[in-house]
Amino acid sequence: MHKLSYPIARDTRAWQLQVWISFVLALGLCAVGLAWLPGEPLARAFMFMGYVFCLSTAFALAKFVRDSQEAPSGDTPLWKLVVWGGFATAMLLTGWGLWGMEVNPTYKAFLGVSWLYLITTAFTLAKMLRDRHEADLLDARLQGRREASREAGHEA
Image (cartoon, rainbow, N blue to C red; front, top):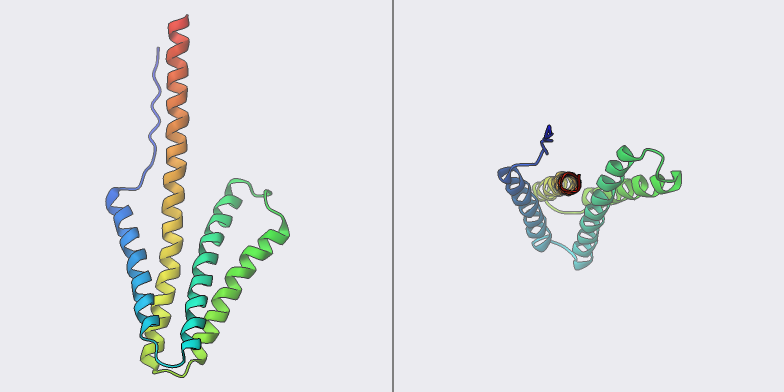
């Protein structure tokens, strides 16, 4: 009997650690920037809400894009508009709020860079988690096939 082997591509532990460290670092930089943001508490609250809105829509967009690759006709056009529109709205409103704040330009740059760093690390984290999930599913399917093949061999 010929035994087939299928390699399952998995991220290295070093890559996973790097992704998590980058994401946590981005969260920390955003938190520091928002915690020491000069000005009115309302401005801090607006920026905090903007960052959370951007982060949640980045994860939703990452999932939507990945799901669309697997089943291109699976979502309705309205859902596509909601996901892309939500992400665009979050990014535009947060950028507009940041641009319009009356704070030191260096401080604005820090907030802007940490915000964009957070968004990019969110996409990377979402991809890594999805890849791991898919590899685990593939591994489970292959394990099930091996066991079924083994049982079929014993019955014959």
